[in-house]
Image (cartoon, rainbow, N blue to C red; front, side, top):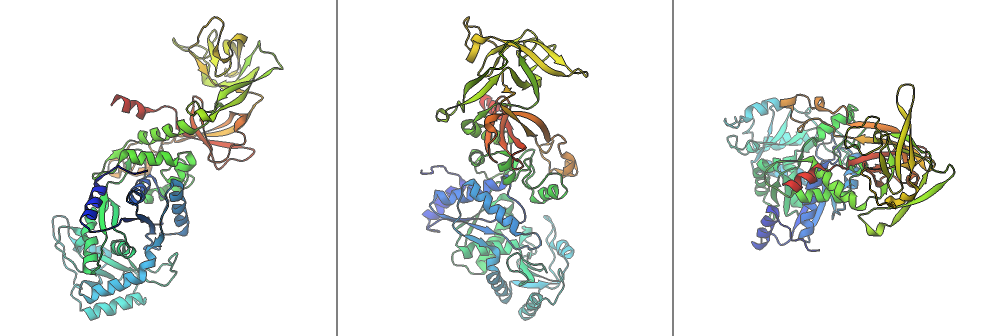
Length: 556
C-alpha cells in the first residue's frame, strides 16, 4: 500500500532527490548494545525503517559497539528479537567494530593533515580548557605538536605503551567555536577492555562522534536520522566527512525524541532499577522496555499505532501515557477473546437452582469480531462472583448485589439476593440468591429489565490462578527530574504491583499459552505470563478497561 503520509524528514528527502543529491534512500537504526530497547527506541525504529519503506529503500541495523566496557551479546540478541517482533526487517546487520580498521586509517589521515593531535591533558583538564557557552576555550599546551610526533605517539598509544586515560587523540578544530562540540573533541581514547567481537585486538577505541558519520558514509547511508540531542553534533558530523574527503557523505537529520510521562527511558537508570532489584529484570512488566511491554501484553500493532499518532516533530514535548494505553486498549478490544474471571472471589449459591443441574451458556468470543464465533461456559448452582459486587448497606443507586436487589448474571439468569453468611471476623463467605428460571439470556415474560449485570464463574468449571495487577512504576510525571525531586528512586510507586492468588478463571483458559491475551469482563485486558506452569497459571493485567484518553479526545 502506498504511503502518502509526510513530515519534515520526508520533505527534506524529497528535496534531496529532486536536487539529485541522492538518487536513493538508505537509513540505519544504530543502537548501542548496552541495554534493552525501550518505548523511545520504538519511535526511532518506526522512523528509520518506515522512512526506508516509504521510499523503497533499505534500512540496516548497525550496533554502535565502540565502548566495550558496557556492551554485551545479550543485548545484541535482545535488540534483534525486539525489532523482529515489531514487524520490521533490516537489509543487513553491521557493527561499528566492522569499521575499526577504516576508522583508525581515518584518524591517521587527520593527523597527517595536521587536523588531529595527541593530548596529555586529563579528562578534568580537558573539561576546564573547553570553556563555557559564554567563554571561549583555551588551547591545549599539546595542540601544536608536529605531525611526526603525533603519529609516533598515536602508534605508541595503539601498542599499549601508555596507561588508560593518560593520552587521547583530539581533532584540531576551533577552541573558540560557539559550539562546544567543535572545541577540539576527543576522537580516540586508550581503553584496555575486551571487546565482545574483536577481543583484545584494540587498545584504543574511537568515540561515537567520530565513528558515527564515518560508519554511516562507509555503509552508504544517505539520511542518518537521529534524535534531537544530536543536533548540536551535526556540525562535527559534517566536519569529519568534509575533512576526510568522502565523495558521497551522509546527511544527518534530527527529530524530537519520545518523552512519555510517568515513564523512565534512560538506559542507565533502567539498568539501576534492574541491578538494585527494584524490578525483577529488564522484562518486568512495569518497565518501559519493549520486552517488558510484550510480556505485559502490549501488541506490536498498538505500539506502532501509538508512534504513528504522535507523529514526527522538530521540538521535544511530553506525550501522555494515557494515549499509549488507549492504543493498546483499542487494539486489544478488536482481537482479544472475552473471558469470565473473578479476581477476588466469594461464593454465590442459587438456593432454588437444582443441585445436580449444569447448563451450557453460549456467549460471544468477541462482540467486536463477527468471525470470532461463540464459546460455552458452564452454569450451576454454586458460582463465584467478585466480593465487591456485594454490599450489605448499599447507597442509593447501587445496582449490584444487596439483599432484595435483582441483578443479571452475564449471559445467564436474573438472580435476587436473599442474604449472606459471614465468618467470625465479619467477612462475607457466601451470598445467597434465588433465580428466575424464565429469565435466561436476560429475557423475561414480563419484559422487566435490571440495571446491574455482573460476571461469574461456575464452581465446578473453573481453575485457580495468580493474577498480577500492574500500575505505573512512578508517582510523578517526570521521574527523572532529579533537580526537583531528588533521587529518581524516591518517586517509585510502592503500589505498582498487586499479586492476587486464588483467582477463579473459566475452564476454557486452562490451556492458554504464554502471551495469549484476553479481556476479562468488567476487569480489563490480561495476558498469560511466562511464569505460568501447568499447576499455576499466571495472568498479567495489560491495561484496565477505563479509557481516560478516549474521553479526553472526545471532549477535545
